[in-house]
Every structure is written in structure tokens, then in C-alpha cells.
Amino acid sequence: MLEGGIWPVVALSLKVGLVATAATLPLAFALAFLLARARFPGKVLVDGLVHLPLVVPPVVTGWLLLLAFAPAGPVGFWLERWFGASVMFRWTGAAIAAGVMALPLMVRAMRLSIEAVDRRFEDAARTLGASRMRVFRTITLPLSLPGVLAAAVLGFARALGEFGATITFVSNVPGETQTLPLAIYAALQTPDGEAQVLRLALVSVALSLAALVASELLARRAGRGVHVL
Image (cartoon, rainbow, N blue to C red; front, side):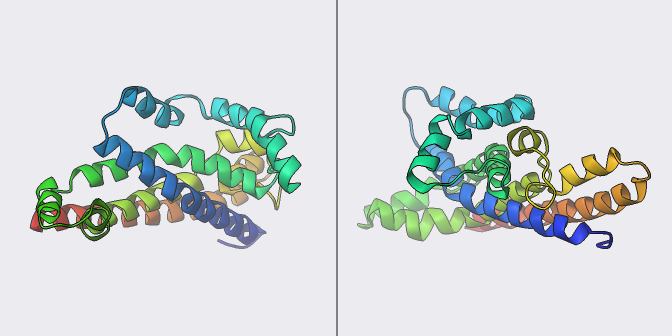
């Protein structure tokens, strides 16, 4: 299945997915913990903004990223001025688009995992003199970790399948931004490209299915762990 120039596309897709997941993971966990435990004005609005990429067309998300990271955009101008770098038409831009689209799913899964942790264990530890940081490090994080890992794998699967925001933001550049979904789209536009589409689709389905199965197994493990404790 990896013949016909498919391996470079698969390698790029894996790199984009892994970087997007790793870069998004800390932010997703912070947002999930904030939404699960904190009470503050505007919490509903923050929750809505976090999950907005799930409901707006991906093209809109890609367009907003384009405005933000363009050379004249607020983020792109800063990157160009201070680092001489740009993510336009680069694989790093594809990773940003994939991370933004994966963020809501990761936050939601992590939030459920954090909310499933029995607060009585944390309260008991605090009554014994443990600081909030120690309680978080020794109780909250270990109990929610399987759910966090499941969220990461789910985000990785979502990043592998990202199309709309990526093609709008960084276009479809072979060898640079052409991930599996974009390669499938390009092959569909090519005469006699059915065989290539089939190979790419099979690889895409296999990778996504493996990620989803892994995520489900981790989520079940998280549920069993919290139930046993």
C-alpha cells in the first residue's frame, strides 16, 4: 500500500499529527482543568469558544488562521519580525491547523476524565496537609492520566483527518503540506487516479481506526481505574 509515492505522504501526515497533538496537549489539559474545576464569569463563553471549531465550517477556521498568520496578520507579523519565520505554505502551518481542529475533542475528553476523579481523595489529602500542587501531582493527574492519553490519541486521529482548515490555510503543496486527506483530494482530480485514491484511503482508514481503538481502550482503562479507587 505504500508504493507509488505514498510513503512520503504518510510520513508527513504522521509528523503533522504528532507535532499538532504534542503542541496542543498542554493547552488542552489546561483548558479542560479550568472548565472542569473553576468557576468564573464567562465560563460558558469560554467553553463555547473552545468548542467552536467543531461547529463552524473548517474553511472558516482555516480562513481565520490565514488572517492571523499572514505576513500582515497579528501573529504572522510578530513571527516574521522577531524570528524571521513564517508558517505559510509550510508543514508547521498544517500542524497548527490540525491542532486547532483537534483541540475541542481533546478538551472534551480530558474534561470528562478530570470530572470523573473522586474529589474525596483530594479533600482527604488536603486535610492531611498536602499542598494543592502535591494533590494535583499525586492524585488528580495520575487518576486522570489514562483519560488524558485517550484524549491525545483521539486528537491525533482527528489531526490525521484534517482537510478543510489545512487546505484553506496552507494550501495543498506536495511534499510540504500535502497530508493524506489532501493527497486523496489531489488524486481524485487526476485522471486514472482511482488506484492511488484506494491505496491512500486504505492507509488513512487503517491509521485512524488504530488510533480510535487505542483511544477507546485507554478510555475504558480510565473508567475502570476511577471505579476501582
